[in-house]
Amino acid sequence: MLRLARGTVLTAGDPDSAEQELTVQLADGAHPAIVDTALLGHAEPGDEVLVNIAARELELGSGGFDIVHANLTRGLDAPATSPERVMKLNYTSLQHAVHAVEADLPAKLPPLPPAPVAVLALHSQLAPLAWAFANAAPGARLGYIQTVGGALPASHSHTARLLRERGLLAGHLTAGAAFGGPDGDAITTPGALAYAFSSLRWDAAVAGPGPGIQGSSSTLGHGGLAALETAHGAIALGLRPLIVPRISDADERPRHRGVSHHTATVLRLLLARVTVALPPGKYDIAGHTPARAPTDLDGYERSGLPADFMGRSLRVETSFFTASLVAGGVLATLL
Image (cartoon, rainbow, N blue to C red; front, side, top):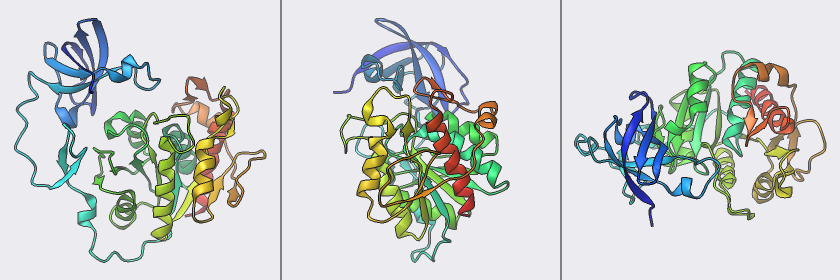
């Protein structure tokens, strides 16, 4: 069952932000919370709210806060239902209508340019990849497609917002169950890819989960497996996928040392040979094609972009960040 609690907003951040930060007084004390303002509207001090407390109770690493489920004070006066008939979060209490970008595509889609698509394992790879791509291909338009596997609201990606503000991303679409993309919502990842290259005129795309990742320690039970659908969709559309592997020299869990079991599973299940961006060193990617490019780890460290992964710094997780930087450079060579 949903773990909901009733509370009162004590403090509220910028009401115009995509994701507003709050402090909410609950029966057991004051706790941080967030609200997706596009979905639920903004909150103000004194508002009575219902918050979902499940992630905080479970002490999840990427969910140490409550999430507003409903604003009982000002959230019941939403405008009339949109004329759109495609629902995101369908058949849940948060279902809402969106305009699907697939509706703007021609019934018979013409061939797409053979554009490159970087396929992420984790959201933390997005910033180093985008930075390296921009340095290797100045002026080229790189966009981000947020898939399932991690956080579903586009508003929760502070990294994507920062990259857009700095001109390192040309756009941000959401696909599948992910929602709220500033540049549109797609029903499927292939639909998002087609729209990105035919309508938004991106030169390259990077696709992967939002912040955080679902995981069960099992081979098939993790959000990184979304890369499989993305890569297959890209191949079917005549695009060129580039796998960005999850690699670590510092993770205490053996399954994530070297090439993570997340990436190894995707490579094993892929139905076609693909290119894999790799840092220096020996890594097992049997059946696929390695690709390397120069990197500037020091330059990225000075960029002011996110430079830690699971609480470990760039200097500790060197291979993780190097692989993402390599991917940005390789992606530029595929234009």
